[in-house]
Image (tube, rainbow, N blue to C red):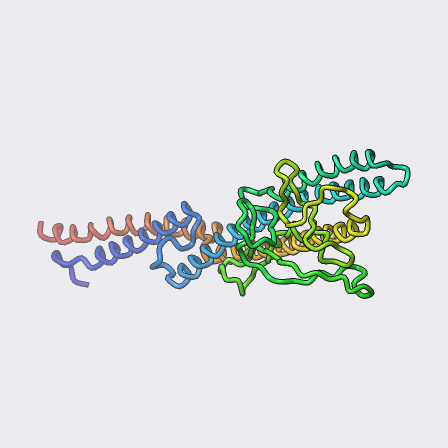
Length: 327
C-alpha cells in the first residue's frame, strides 16, 4: 500500500463506520427512551399504518364501552321507576279490593277514592321522569307533550295477556325506542341494541282489553282535572279488580323487557371489553419495543461507536508517516 498525503481511505472508512454506528446508537436510545419500536414511519411504514388504525379502533371501542355503561344506567333508572309504578298500582288494586267490601258505605268508598286519586297524580309525575334530561317513558298520544317521547321511532305492536288464548284479550299499542350503537364502526348493521322507552300510557290503560273501558287510564292529575288519556277515573268503583290484573301484567312485561335489555347490554359490553384487550395487545406487538433485545443492541452499538471513534483517530494519524519520511 503506497504512502500518500492527499487521500486517507482508512480514515474515510472509519468515519463512515462511526456515522453508521452513531446512527444505530441514536435509534436504540430513541426506542428505549420512548418505549416504542417504531419511532418514525420510515422505520416501518406498513407497521405504523396498521398500528395507527388499531389505535383509532381502540379509542372508539373505549367510547362505545362508556356508551354501554350509560345505556345500562338509563335502563336501571327506568326499571326503578317501573318498580315504583308497580307498587303504586298494587296499592290502588288493594284500595279497590277494600272498597268492594259490602260493609263499606258510600262515605268509606269516597275515602278510598281520595287516596286512589292521589296515587293517580303520583303516576302522572312518574311519567315525566327523566335521565340526564332524556325521558324515561313515552306516550301514545299524537300531540306533542313536553318532556315525553312521542315523535321518535315507533312501531305498532300487539299485546296478548296470559289469558289471551282463551279470551283473545289483545290490544294494539305504540312501541317507542332509542338505538344504542354497540360497534366502533358506528354502523347499525354491525351492532346495535334497541332500548325500549316504555309506553306508560298503554301500560296504565285499563281499556282496550277484555272487559275494559275504552280510553280509560290510571294516569291523571287531580289538580288540573285532566289526564294524559281521554278517560279520567274519579271514582274508585269505576275500575274493576279484574282490570288491575291486566295493568299489573303489563308492568311485569315491561320490567321483563327492561331486564332482558340490561342483560344484552352487559353481554355486549363484555364482548367489546375483550376486543379492546386484544386490540391493545395487537397494537403493542407492532409498536412496543422489546427492552431486553434493544438493550443488547444499545450495548453493542455503544461499544462500536467508541471503537470506531478510536479507530478514526488512529486512521487520521497514518499521514504522519509521510511527514516522517520527508524529514
